[in-house]
Length: 381
Ligand code: MG
Image (tube, rainbow, N blue to C red; front, top):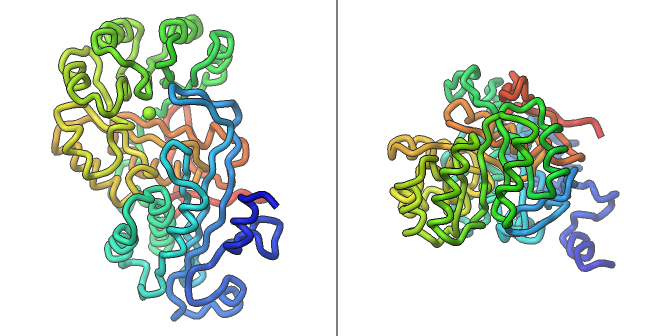
């Protein structure tokens, strides 16, 4: 038995099933709960590991991969189920093992009502430091559950205008020119492209894109540039090539060089790796023009909403992004998209084994479903 399978068997994930059973954290196990949906049973949390398959091997400045581990969560109350997800690309340090360990600590049966969202999520947040993706999986499931109980999608609960959703970008990974051109053709329905750079072939990548389309592009360097003068020269060249912003050009620790670049660059400089959650505002204010918010970095919708308001108070640009995720987490993030400048919510389009249906992209623009909660329904399996 592989060590991973042994781990999953030991913690009960694979017990008695074909690998598709949820673990139950609550007063009742899943079978008992289905037989006795008592109103007094409180909140019941279940979770299961899942692995997303990427349509293309994905290469960024930090490396390549073809799968992403995720944890799918379900939060049940009064026979209504809210869905959540933790997506855990390896470089963030979370895994099926760490998420299982964290979620085993979460005991929501102490809360009488899911409407106590502030109490519940503050409790989840203080359990253990870090574990932001695992925390997001509870936060998203709770938002989905509460929205369903209120029979409204979250953009309506927040009072947001669905006509103000932005276009979403489609990501083109680092590759040979022929492959880049093919991906640009594949991205025909999108009005803006996000091009990954920072692997030493930046101009070749951009020229390949420009041989196919004159759509606006944004570029994500993933900390790949090391020299600030070269970074500034590239920012002017990229502006001429129709770029609208540059994401994480240099190392997240290169604070002085990045501040200098932001002051002198004709394009906004956006923090991604340098900005995880609320406490990082101190580090990025005055250093970057804006931030890339991702639910998996910050712990979910509750924190993301606060951070958008904080960024606006600090006169910073806001982008909302994602990891490779199912439509669950992507659609949850999209509920906030009427508030942001740019959205990069294509994570569900990069996989071939989505388990949910959610946002649609119409003529490149995010279209929010009327579905209550975070706006998703489960795919038939
Ligand atoms: Mg990025």
